[in-house]
Structure formats: C-alpha cells, structure tokens
Image 1 (spheres, rainbow, N blue to C red):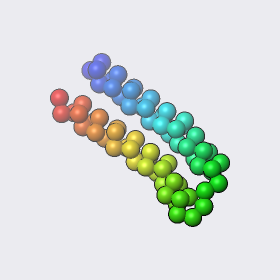
Image 2 (cartoon, rainbow, N blue to C red):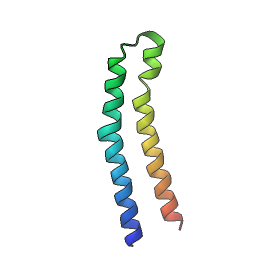
Image 3 (cartoon, one colour):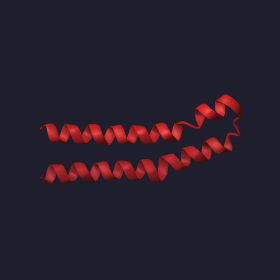
Length: 68
C-alpha cells in the first residue's frame, strides 16, 4: 500500500511540474521567438504534445502499477 501511495505522489508531482512549469515556459519561449507561417504552426503544437506526453506517461505508469 505504501508503494502505491508513493507512486501516486510521484505521478502527481510530475503532472504539477509538467503543467505548472514546463508548459508555461515553453509557451513563453515560443511567443518570444516571433515565428510566422508554417514554422509557427508546427512549433505551436509543442505545448499540446507535452500535455499528451504527460497523459501517456501517467496512464502507462498506472497500467504498470495495476499489472503487478
């Protein structure tokens, strides 16, 4: 049980760091870059991909914990 609690705390910490720190920093860096056109469109997808990556990591980690 203690192992599951520590895993849940680790997941919550990773999500908080990812959402509260990483995504705003990336969005700010992208907006400061003054990109235009196709480059701006592609680079604008980076925060979305970070969010999707966080979701995939959380789901896969939860799946590993329930498999044992």
